[in-house]
Image (cartoon, rainbow, N blue to C red; front, side):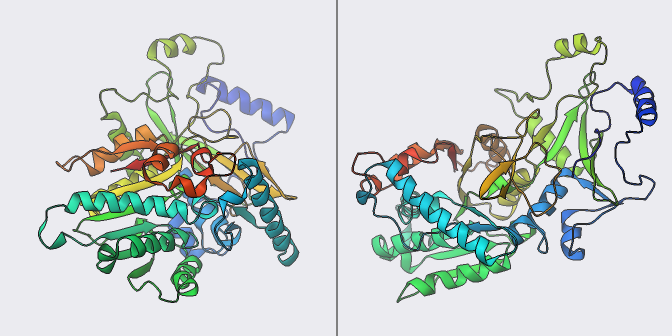
Length: 467
């Protein structure tokens, strides 16, 4: 782990020779690796099909490094480390004194599972939870209620009841949300259920098998309208030209980002690469933006008006001119993590699901993000039963969770550009977790004896994007 200073980071070009001379004199090289060994340019997709261990002597864009670290089928974090906390049954919230009492119960169960994992596995796994699991089935019921209400409004007055309800869910975890939604619709809307189709797009073969067996294990009458599609949404190439709902709950926080920095004088963006040396050391370096996806994202972002988007990494031109005159002034801005994979996801929705409505939820703010960068992720691992945050994303692939907060207002505007710019109305909207729950949830079912309500009070750092 670790690595040397990024090229063009905190020194002017005129001082680079001096800095390198000092390093030579003090015998403090940027890395102990041999930089003369050629580095092959690779992508996350290339690594997934060819490497059983993290490769060395390679270079890749930041999004490929992060994507490979998380999703590589042989050594990625989600392949070897992550498990989803899932209580065997939903909680009876009326039995809890208050939210703190509920949290104590979850904490005890969480610790028990972690101890079991440590006892039976030589590699300590990381356990994480979602609102879908700890608020089941009521959280899934609230999502189903929103979809049913919108579906009825869309089909109202159409002959024969209109189009059937078609749902696509991406990254369904244990399959809990799917089962809860289908249970709700079968019980409360049997006519809609009889014509309904539920498709779950899952990248993990292991989770796809688990999702397929989930509803048959728990139901005397399994749901027969389920289709599990084991592939990445980024490999989707089939046009779904019919009304449908696309559901993505707690998924995009793990979508890989790129890193850019701006030239302080010209404002030109530079894209980050990660060099992996022969000894496993990492180094970040920058080149002028040439990657087509980064270029497309920046064009889309720069096209936004009323208000025009201004990167928080790039200070106003007047400030940059003054600062450039100071001694040892940086020649590049602070790093900015940009959501290029989330942008690609929006493009896929617009192209292959032209008549969809979106139901997406995720974090909009997070503690312990990497310091010194804009919209940076949390990078953490589990050690001795505790989650330990890191201060760099240049960490050993597969051992660390890397997840990002989402700028929902910016995502909404980008989504509208890609998916709602062809006369399809209405435009999308952002709602807080509380606002969504008030509108759609059976709040009486998640109320503790004190009147506190985890459905309203938990996950306050989550928002919804709805279209």
